[in-house]
Amino acid sequence: MNGSLNLNRLLLAVAAFLLIICQPAFAEKRVALVLGNSAYRNTVPLANPVNDASVIAATLKNAGFDVVDFRKDLPAVETRRALREFADLARDADIALVYYAGHGIEVDGANYLIPVDARLERDTDVYDEAFSLDRILVAIEPARKLRLVILDACRDNPFAKTMKRTLATRAIGQGLAKVEPTSPNVLIAYSAKAGSTAADGDGKNSPFTIALSKFLPTPGLDVRRAFGYVRDEVLKTTNNRQEPFVYGSLGGEDVPLVPAPAKQAPAAAAAAPPAAPAATPQSEARRDYELALQIGNRSAMNAFLAQYPNGYYANLARLQLEKFAAEDARVAATEKARLAEQERARLAAEGAQKAQQAKAEADAKAAEAARLAAERAKQVAQDQATAAEQKRQADAALADRTAANKAVPDQPATQAAATPPAPPAPPEKSTTVAALATGSPEADVVKSVQTELRRVGCLTGAVDGDWNAASQRSLTLFNRYAGTKLDIKAASVDTLDAVKLKQSRVCPLACEHGYKADGDRCTRIVCAEGSFLNDDNECEKRRERKPVAKRDSDERPSRRERERAFHPQREPQVPSAEIPRPQGRARAEGGGSGQIMCDAYLCRPVRRGCHLEYRGGGGPGGNVGNVEVCN
Image (cartoon, rainbow, N blue to C red; front, side, top):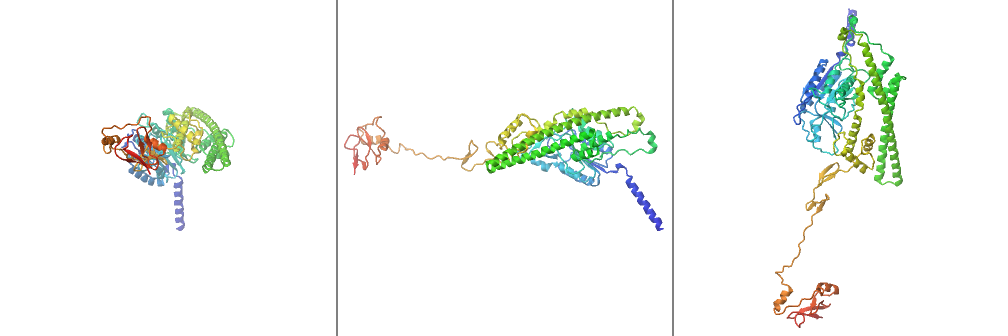
């Protein structure tokens, strides 16, 4: 009896184990949150986001996702509640996906998604009224296999014209900023490359959403290749004006959003299409090289070379390694130049000995020359790797078209109808080559230079990727105050690195009359009581008007009037114009009493020790009047 019971338990355990290991691939739990914001309350509503979100929600439901939570036109409070609820769903999920369509904004390098009730009257309001991209990443963090965020939010900032700046150096960019996910198995897809904007299209849905619904639900198609096809489709649709971009990386295994169909039973083998041609060493090398290229780091390329040390793809891998080495050398040289410049500035500020300053100056110049050389070497290596990759893509596209043309005539129509759809063939690589020639790297360099010039206080305009007269004036100011001689006619990588070396404000803050610079902002000048603000923008003390003593002619009669009062019959003689003024002669001859003695001929000062006495009568020349009396 006991032996029979133990046997039954063993059989049940084996059966349970077989059930576990025989589970099909589509047993993975997949959940999605789809958000669409169109009805903005404090700015112009958008036409397409809700329509785009509806299409994506329907696409994911048809693809067999376990949960598709579709929300539209949510205010901030409800958005945060939806993220909390979705985080609970993602705890035991293998794949968690968040799709958002609406307005987004970049502030100081961080991305924020705008709910429909946001006002954003000041730039700091974004921290309270919007929710950051990091908040979404936290919601999908529990997923085990793939955490995917798709943002169709690369539109112009609708609040830019009305938003008040609380800090002059706070950058508000165009589109969304570049991100570097720190968690594994995370992909973040933008409808347009960082720093650029996306088009809504002329129809009901945006080109990005149309391409997503076309390629993402393809069974068995790796999500990275699916986004590659989305990119090429959007470039083709928008005439190379919009380039979707994906940030993050996955491992070497394929990660499809929709699992590949199960293998056909042996009974249906006779009706199955002919087997694909056997893999060749060249095709295997190509597949592994493309995977290493998608990972895009030195370790992946070294692992590929260890497996394929020789051949065409091995040479391509070595070119990629040379590009990585050149980039590392450039970064190291840039850092060394920055440290040398800091040391030179420190010694100059501390008033070090001339010999030390001269040595620091020479070291800074040598480091700058090494940086420029490393920059040129990096550019050469990058151009070689890019040219080789373009040629490889063109050859691969030709080989794929040739293989497809050979396979089509041999496949019966009925079998073609019964066969599950294969992953779509890559679009013509001429689109990719055209995209490389659109000049987007130059625009990225211009925006980066403008951002750095704004950081050091030399640019007050917008960071728009247009190297216009305002940008050239800002670089001229940088040259003046930083002591550099950068070419102002064009923005270059050398200019970008030179501006990055400055760790603090370079150009002085210019304020209007009545304001003064206070750190990175302008504050109003308030003068103390009794002072006023003069034309030099300085407080000046008001000067009080002193009273001026005036002799009132009505109170004291003149001398002539007094003489007339005493002798109305006589008119006193007035000295001629040639006779000096009494006061002047008194000062010149140094009279002691300061009194003046006048007779019929002249006036003179009273001698020292003497004074005048009035003894009646009046007028010069008589025995009466003023008489000089000496002690």
